[in-house]
Length: 230
Length: 274
Image (cartoon, rainbow over all chains, first blue to last red; front, side, top):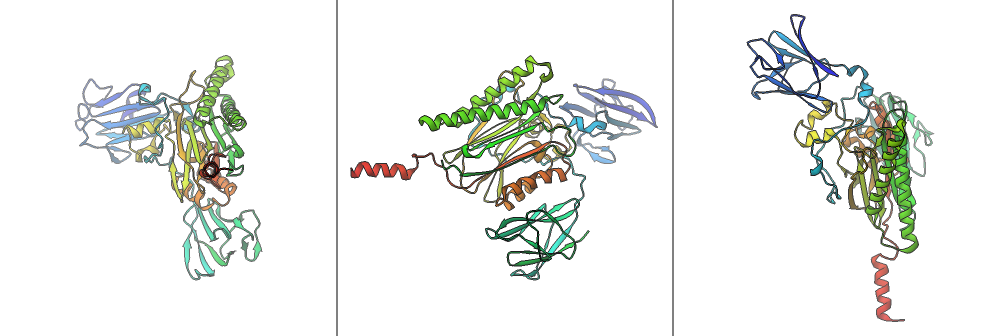
């Protein structure tokens, strides 16, 4: 359940539970939320609902409104967002936000496209889609940063920043090791080859080995010195 | 088909937050069958639904493959998948109707059947199938999810999608109605290809670019690639159960007797006589 709370000078003026309908906001008396402020247009904004999303949109696309201090034309409302409307504040409260895990439960819902329009027969053979929806929420995890420097082998003297989740070293088909970036540091693990990689001369076997600054990884004909930067 | 044309690694993990694992995964590398399901429903019914889905599907596909081997009927993997998914759907729907503990349970599904240098793909819901070929990741399925619909219809932009609360709302699933339409596709499969079936616990937490990097960098060690994918999802939050099935095509796999060389030899034998 989500609701909107309109306040002015700290006092609640109006509140409204959001369900499946649209909510209109403006100075005009016909709006669901009436904001009696000269800077607010008669029909100023609309909040529509799609699934669990409440989407705020301005009626006049040339205008913008401050949400949490940032000029905005459209926004998927997030728990505790504050929309500034002249002397008024409109706060969006998502009462489910405190139990985020439940919200994440997979549920079934009707699609936006009408069912009769959706293919029942096999889809066209080429199923590859270009449309890229970025993964997720911003992750709160912090990852360290580190690098390796070649101290033996054909790439002697070169350095490589370890800024991705994995980086492989060695010769594919012969001997390869992977360095993995994790929240608590970097690890080196055997990938393939007749001989296990070595750290400071010791074979690491098949288990991941936590790396420390100054450690030297040997794989194939390369030696790499690891450095943790942060 | 050679028996060991396919190398498979599979892994499922409850994640960092959930109490139960409602995903289910099964693979039969010898028959080239992969199945993954992500269940939903209260009181652990999701576990029941996803297991019914993978077990029913794989049993049906195994039976079809064995019929084919026994009498050489034309093997139609897409038909076998469709029939098996329908059977699984009805079984889950009936269980939900008859037993109040299972009311409303359902499951997503992603499945692949390798056959004659091709791979038949099926999915329902937001479980995905990717392919890595020549180091490039391609998504071969289209999520049945409200978020996807929103972006596709322009209700929100792809960039806004990370702000959406609709990530876990699927628009199609097994067990919800008395029938279900699976999305089907059939693609050429070539040696070196790696196919990835995953539940949304992976792609919700790990960007495509990182999935691509992990699978292509570690394709030589498939179990290690699987643990890295699951670990990356958990390192990025691990809010949901996370499951992966990786399958690498090691050699071409024409149907026995139907390869061009066999046909050519047979033709040559006819022409040249005994």
